[in-house]
Image 1 (cartoon, one colour):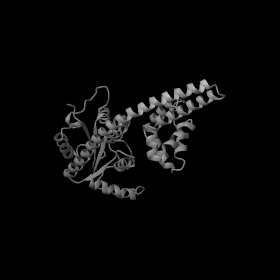
Image 2 (spheres, rainbow, N blue to C red):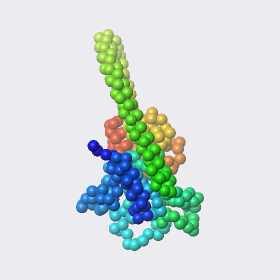
Image 3 (cartoon, rainbow, N blue to C red):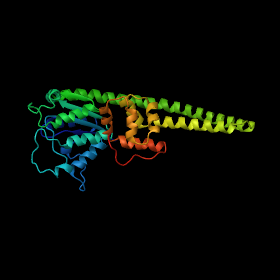
Image 4 (cartoon, one colour):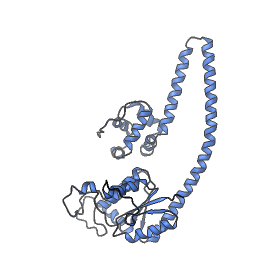
Length: 326
C-alpha cells in the first residue's frame, strides 16, 4: 500500500536532532519520511544534487519546513558564479532550503512550517529595525532568514506557522494538524458523493432544458412569425455566454484573484473579457486596491499559466511572452 511521502526540509547541522526525531515521528504514523541525509532522494547524474532535492520536494504529499538559526548553502545555479567563500550577514542569496520550499509551494503541496522560538522572536525585532544595520542578532547567521519568514507569512494560504523550543512542541502540533487534514479529506469524500448525486440530477435537468429549447425553436420556426430566427439566435448567444461565465468562474485564476482582491467572480470575469493583456486585466481587477497588492500577485509563479488557461477558454490571444509591470 502506498504511503504518504513527507519531505523534511531544513539546514542539517544545527537541526540534525530535530530531523532525526521528525523521521521517527513520521514513520510512527505509517508515513514515509524523505530526508536527504538518509539517502531517500533519488539523485540524477545529469543535474546538480540540489535540483534533485527540489524535484522531490515538489513531488511530495506533505512538506515540513523547519527554520532555525542557519540560512543554509546557496543554490548551485548561482553558487557557481560566486567567487566569495563566505557570505556577509546582509548579503542576499537564495538557499537550497528556500528553493525547496518554493518548489513545494508552486505545486500546492500541503506545507507545515516550524520556526525556532528564539529565531521568531528576533524576527519581530528585525521587523521594527529593517533599515538599521547596526542591530546585532545573536540567533541567526543571515538576514535572509528574516526575509524568508517574510515571504512565508505573505502567502495568502498554505502557510501555517508554529514556533517551537523542543520536539514535543512539534509532535503535538503536527499530530493535530494532520488529524485535521485527514478529517478534511474524509469530509471532502462525503461531499464528493453528494455532489455526484446532485450532478446527475443537474444533468437530467439539463437534458430536459435542451429538449424544451428544441421544442420551442420548432414551434417558433413553424409559426413563421417575423423575427423568430432572431429570437432563437439571441437566446443561443445568451446561453453560450452563461456557459462561458460558469466555466471561467471555476478557473484557478478567478478563484485566486477573488481571494486576494475582494472583487467578485463576475467582476473578475468582466475584466478578463474586456481586456487584452494580463497587465490591463490586473489593472482592472485591482483598480481599488493598493499597488503593492497587485505587485505581489504579479510575482506569483502560477499567475501567467492561470491567465493563459482562462484566455484559451474564451478563445482570445495568449499571454504576451514578456510582462512589463506598471
